[in-house]
Length: 279
Ligand code: PXL
Image (tube, rainbow, N blue to C red; front, top):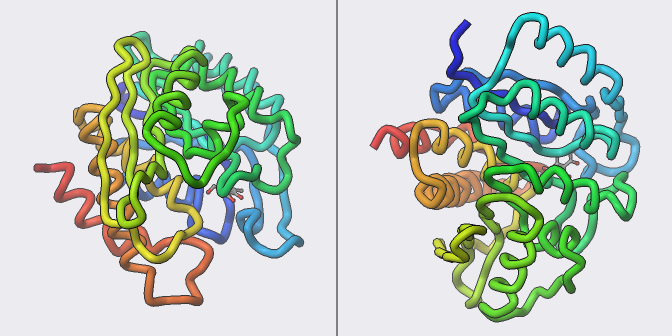
């Protein structure tokens, strides 16, 4: 079996263009063999009106991992996203220990919150568990809400660079090696990311023009494109910038369609992503 494959661990929301229904096509399109471990099955993501189904798959994680162990299955990278329960954190820590190759990369998107609040269904202290997973990661990809919740910081919509540097410093203390903080804005017309090296304290920014619409699922589109670019040998900064450009394209592809409120038309711009990765 080829060794050059990755594992992504997150829920499968049947409808809604997020988590696995984004990660699998995006990373595969980047030419990377993408194995999946679903953490839960939902009828839709949780931003739909209440009524969505939720099947927690925590019980399946250990038997799946045991079987993989018997087959000596390992991965070049493990990328985790939305988790189905807090118990999954310990199981995923074990999974990383067993199945991530020695020179492999653990990428954690602590997908659990946005706009200052936790997604529906998570217990209030869930960010503490997510922080334990971030502690072992090579790269974490939080938005500002997730960063605040994991570091007990005040969530602010208006801030200066000092606030962002303070958040990055606190995230660095969780134990991860690099942070890509999304949703950073120092002016009304620009939105971007901060890339922080937890060892050296070096911070680099990348900005795009801010679009007039926020969209669901863009965190997952961003993280998946980041993983696709990174696994193709791009640096953390170049992957973070490329993923930002791709995410902007997917929002632009969706912006005129009000009925498409639940996600972005990421499929329309896969050609752009692949061209950028090749160059
Ligand atoms: O896009 C993040 C996400 C993933 N999975 C589920 C969600 C959300 C955001 O709401 O509800 C189930």
